Image (cartoon, rainbow, N blue to C red; front, side):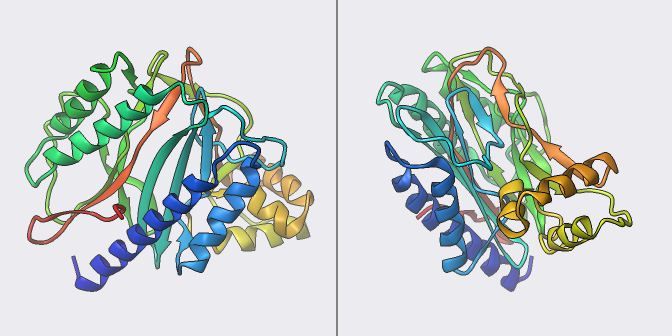
Length: 295
């Protein structure tokens, strides 16, 4: 891995860390969820980065992929998982935190945070993925909660939000090993419910798939905008802010043509509450473990 690549990975992580801290403090009672997301993405730009994916705040039984395109959710007593991704020239920092506005879920928040810390503590070249997963599972189950088994940490590549390795949130038995030069996110989720998530609701997060020629003028304009995201995820709100409601028609047409992939919100199967914590890890050429998203 080249020194310049390492510096960009570190810079992306630092911007993500600053943005997460900023965004966490915006999640307060009576604030608008969508306005908080807008401010978080403005902060990323202000600090010299770009979103690696749309900022997301998934509440209560929702674990991921919640990016509303209507300003009708006001914070009150939710359990809010804030997930922030930043890229610098394609190199990504990915981080997350849970804010408990009710004050009733301290142990659930603590479970995912401790799982993340304990997983990071075992990371080094040569450690197996199952050892990381076991650290996460043991930490969460100690509090009486379930790790979410069908969500995982993931490798981060240049303009690639999810690549190898896949870091399990449980003792998976995988003997795949961490190696020098890897960049990945460790992302424990703790649940009071099933510990299994499933699609729930209408997708507002998408990613470019197979490009095809389109005739409709607005669809062509929206497609040109999507191409500027360099195959990273995007959200409906970004497009409606620029093109108005007609952007939704363009998205529908592209979905029907198989041009874009949709990612609906993910909810605990039993509607249990879900907490989340996440950091990005870089294993440098010397085998040093660097948490790029720690302040």
